[in-house]
Image (cartoon, rainbow, N blue to C red; front, side, top):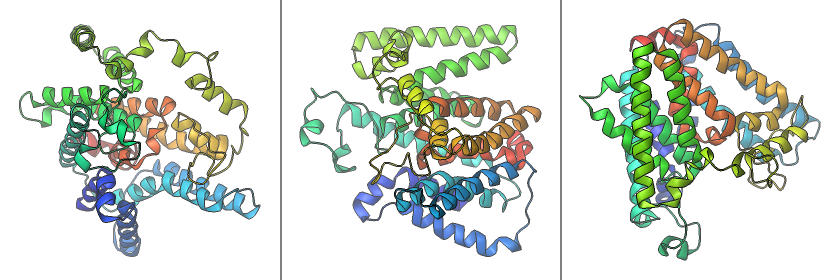
Length: 391
């Protein structure tokens, strides 16, 4: 467990660590060392997991096979970029397969505590960044003109030390939901404070998915509750939305208001708008991608790739990388994990999985290693869902 917690820390703080050490990314080096250790000692450990994990292994092998096949027939425009793509999209599942197969009982309570408190630091830094210092007083390198960091007239969206507004917003929202689902592990009503810290920092990212996924989460929760609980959750949701709208209208903050524009702005959902609209991007990918094999491994990797495709969706990213072959291999183990949590009546993990898998449909941020902690929620049920439920 300690190896994984250290890895989670190194991933989240990779930007400031790299800025001061010159080693980038240090978590890759650390994870490779751990993987080597796991592989070398693997035969001496007992392996216990359900047959469903085979689907996860198939996904990894399909990705690697497509890479080897396209490299053999010289279909790859840049073999190094394609190799990076395979590595970035498979190393976390591979790491977790070896991690979970080595431990008989996953201490979820310890993991959640560590994950939430680490997330609070990231969120607090985002709030401080937005209100006081855009480069966090030199903690993160400046990648834009100095005027952007010094002139408050420039529009700004918080990203904390994660360097991406989309990644930061989704990270905060998922942590907020994690707090609600596991509120009993925190003392008294401390979870309420944690929840609002995550929501406020998420809204400061200007990420529309924050409010959209929160609304989706409330809809799912209400649909699974009995009549009295539905009224309670619905009334709490309405009160929260009213307070949020009143507060945000008073401060007139364009960044926060941007998070709610999906409710009344058709630009972001209209396929008749420019290619910057999400549906326009989706349609363009679906119309210009080989259904079976996609656009080739590495097509969504931006480094040294002139034909880089920004998919705005994790599912479409996989579709572009390997067509339906790769996408179906991924959905196979994702849906298996969802079904297993439902059959084991593990409602907390079930709701989290619904939101995580839903977010992948219109956010491509899950390609970032920042979400390694949430990959645990996706993959762990394949090994021992009943143990997650009883933790």
